Image (cartoon, chains in turn red, blue):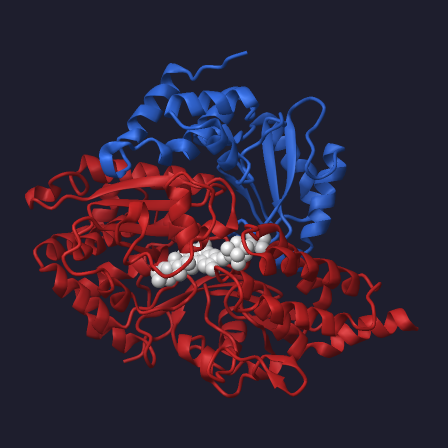
Length: 442
Length: 172
Ligand SMILES: Cc1cc2nc3c(=O)[nH]c(=O)nc-3n(C[C@H](O)[C@H](O)[C@H](O)COP(=O)(O)O)c2cc1C
Ligand code: SF4
Ligand code: FES
């Protein structure tokens, strides 16, 4: 049965001060799944996760069980790394999850590490999350003291080491191969893929990188079964979703919501509607890397596949008559991304908002690939002059052609992350850009 | 002038060197980020001498340490005010008057973004998204978050921070 509104798996302890200590976490059922999992065969844990249809909550929505299965059989040294770098604008769930329930993340990591046979494991936490660094380190220390971490967990002979690694300010370190470089003490620049981390990752060993929310779902899956989790979801996406709703709604917030909830329901039923009695103009569905939805596209559910394929969402265009090609003629609509839902009302200056997004990407490009380094700089510069009313007549076409030149031509997905929303906004809000240019001409 | 780490920092670095499963047991390079955080805490900013100290402590080439220190935005090569105010102006914050709040910080402190006050108390940074978007506009100051800020609340925030500063070094 699909999860009803109010179902809480990862956010169950939000607002519950008890979870701040290990004793309180245990008193609310914590670390009981760990005992069950340590008695299971690792392959059985992975199978349960496959059955659950848990999909990565970090951005790409890839099947977690399938990814775990990519670790070559018989690998001697494997690592599990939790991606807690959360810095995608509009996204603020991982930080809340760590703050309210750090031990659920640790438990999820121990269970997952057992499935992978991973002994030396790491949490890469964003440098600016100073409060959460303190919370997490305290929780890890407690878990060591209690024997949930260490050489011989609860006398089972299983070893699990967990180290908190603090970043120092760089959005790109959320990209998994940049993250691994940063963890190795290098500059945080992405690596060429393949090889993928599951085959050759941290220190050259097979490595699984998973998002905070992804790993926090694992204990419930092992506790109640993969089928239970899958049934809560929708289509090929199991479980619930953490969504961070920000911008022009009456009651913004971080919510655990059913997979099948639509954007109209999120805005109106969960968040009290658009603020000041206004109407919605645009919604970014999953962090600023994702193309926007317009007011007519909000009856689509927040589920991973729906956002990619639902034909009620108009495809992103390169220019009139030319659809953006994701490969093999596949249309780009949008994606679920990292759960950052940004609502813009009908008074929003869209070109200005787009400029702020492009400023971000230009600032965060690591500079390795020319199309991304130069292209994001140009997107920022041109979108700025359009926004401030000093644009040139050809600027809309220029923005589109720069974006098209970046997309698909870079080492990592940051290039696409800048190009896709730029094209998406031009596709759906072209009139707003044209109005700015007309004002200039007049 | 050659710099040193305090005994406490040396202990922390030595303990961290045991934590990374680098093949061959040479676990020192991954500790460079933590060592830079510690050097910044103890010496205020990452001068050439501070970078040399990190290089020497971890037996890494100076060029490597320099490369890392200049890649990440939280590492400072120049001195700055004691308490860093990181004010987000990214999309969710901008949509709810984030730039006006940043300007209120500038006005109250009498400095531009990116600068420090003459008394060495404050350092103001225009920050990218700090993962508190549902409470936009917001700022993070050490372990303290300031949420749902309006421009008129800014003077009071500065007053509070004068009484109880939150230097980022308290985390390291
Ligand atoms: C530029 C860029 C930034 C990213 N930032 C994050 C991030 O902050 N947190 C995260 O979990 N994933 C982030 N990702 C996705 C990761 O590369 C990776 O896919 C994810 O951590 C895998 O975990 P999952 O399968 O559990 O989602 C980012 C990707 C890119 C291209
Ligand atoms: S796409 Fe951009 S961020 Fe990614 S590796 Fe290339 S230059 Fe760096
Ligand atoms: S956009 Fe300001 S905290 Fe996310």
